[in-house]
Image: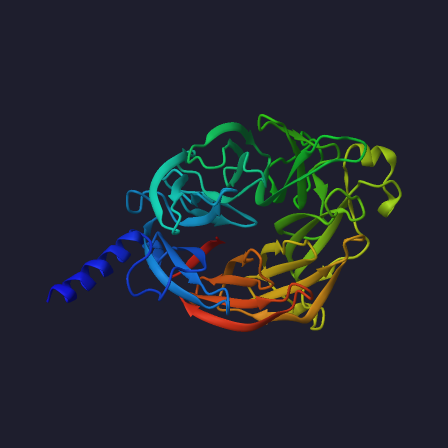
Length: 440
């Protein structure tokens, strides 16, 4: 009896190490990696963070726990949208929507009295989450759209439907956020991306923020610049988080309804043999496209002048990559809502929500043009809304995951580090209506 009791006590001690996130019976050993997935639940009644163990050998996922809450008070924060980790992976932030939007095409109007929030969590060495604590409360009745952070973890950026662009100061390892800049916009923001690089002829790195817009609230002769719905706004980010709109911004997009954006630096470390490129995903009547722009860093490249280089201006490339070019435009991918690049910045992955498909492209690191991978795409579950890449340290393996909202599951793919190709698809059931995700 005493021997059996000792075994039970030892088992309970092991389980205690996984308190809050990990639970007994979830895995035969500590997970090699973790995938955090926000789940909105049926009719928005979920508001949880689901944690999955990642098998670094196969990429398979095992549900560990789904008990971490995205809001301290039930239904007081709105739906969870985005989740990100700080550079140390010791702090997680969750963006909660606040009041929902009432659709008024081509945009939506906030309706309700719920304030969007950013909640913070401490991440334990075993991956457990403790919290939440409220790191920031936005305007009551507004609707949060998306958030991102810079690579160094100095600033967190948020766009809302009111429309606002907010910049919060942050410190790696801290759950605290301090509002640094609040900018009221004249256009409805849809996506944002931030990048840091050292402009030619300088020694100091500069941070740039790019925001896509699909509706201009300014009308009539008072508009300056003239009315243009479909644009990308570019800002330089100061050391204190201040924003300065770039010369020539906002930049016109030769398509309707840009809905996503990603900035990519293909320059190898300490070299200037690649380029800085900005890719814009749009949704028009002919389907989804990716429009590439080049940031001027070399005189003569894509018509860039010395003045353009000095101002790091954007210029459209001569070609655009239409998603799924091997089929007629009317059946091309719809709603490219999310994009990411691999750690080498050689491959771009585009998630099309309306066509339930993940597309892959090779980036020409010098010219910025895109070439479809082989195979060019992989099917996902229904209404995919977010994606995350797991790159194990010291391993040649990479795994790409997609959260599928309507089908309430996660698609997973092995990704080649040399060709970028996606293969060995898996489907893992998740709690209802998964949304944002991040890998650790």
